[in-house]
Image 1 (cartoon, rainbow, N blue to C red):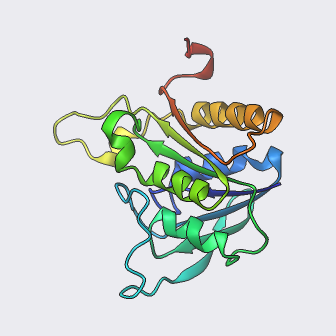
Image 2: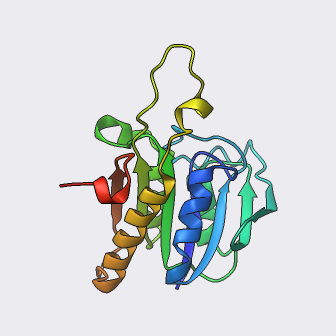
Length: 190
């Protein structure tokens, strides 16, 4: 099984790295993510006649193959669909996005946009987001807000979802939107 892991927070995101390593038990993991922040990009691939996407090899600890693309996450999936990164992918997993993607935010989420683009290309997509509990203090920067993220918990939940998905694969491609509280796995209830 080949799994494409992407996000909308960029190739250097800690959540992306933790998620990619958690997917290794399921097969060959290739990371293809934006070279910078693309939150709110939804399923946009960009104006291809204006932009000239660049692709560069990157290094992520524990991952054999990683690429940075100068474009949004949906473009990463779009390029993968057409063979830019080798053989076809069997699954796209997007995240771990810092901040829940629920309600109207699903329309704008680049995390979910990547999963939707996968589905529209005939591949199931799983979007993984995690609540941010420390955000909202006046003057606080984003880096300070995500210091307490329990990325490992979201990655464990993502692995559980993928395991269930693989055990009972659907006949048609679908999108699964997973939102995880910022808690230790043992403290997640309900």
